[in-house]
Length: 189
Image: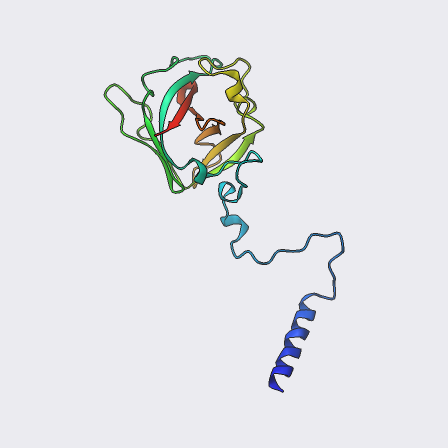
């Protein structure tokens, strides 16, 4: 008997919470199964795996090495050249917790002090060329390398500006924008 009364109370409570409004037939069903508030989700972690062009931090996690350097030709000052030794061979470690540069070899500089804690990815443009907004093709970069989706790397607590913009190529290489108009072509280490 107690179970029957308890069941009736639960049914009445549920009916009272719905305010008598039924969901309309064409409306999407509300999803109450998620226990993670929307503000705590990261775009990279909720993105669907490749096939639809989305990229996740998990997919690019690991050690990467700068295999070549391209240069954006727009802008008044050009501090780098194609395959500039400042970056050639440098390594960057990517994880869900942090992006950080490996130690510089003799004569290299430019990236040591910069890291990104709590990275997430946000779609930047339909492709890298659009995201960069370049009028002239970058030096040392094949035009077809710019036709893949681009993602801004955002750092937790880092404000609104992107740490870098990345694009994963079908052959597994990744292009990453960097300081002084550099486009770094990275390969997995």
